[in-house]
Length: 178
Image (tube, rainbow, N blue to C red):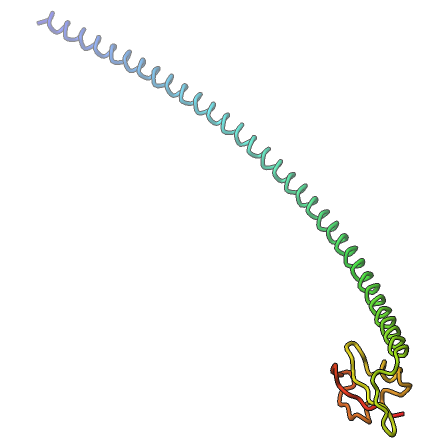
């Protein structure tokens, strides 16, 4: 029994010491795994920090590009505004020139029509006791007709009881007093 007890005690010692050895190995393996995991995490964090730095640099570049685009846009708007003012100025100047030319043309045409009316033989005017009858032709105005007969337009308007002297009709007969 002594021998059996000794074997039993030896086994217990071997088992216990083996357990401790196994535990130490497991602890070392666990520590190694933890160290590897920490190293992997550090590498991942480092990669993420590099990506973050790249993103921040890209963000700063975008801010610079936006500022440049806004400056370009502001310059373009200012230029377009200036160009628009220049065009508007030219348009106003052309409008005044056109209005002046239009007035000159109207005056010249009126003068020429009056001259034509004067140069033509008295158009089929029928002499009555105190004046002439005139048949209105295309393009004639009361002032031109009055000038051709040497009478004031207001006299023709009054004698013919015209409500609107500017509203003559082609073929209308007017009495022109002498």
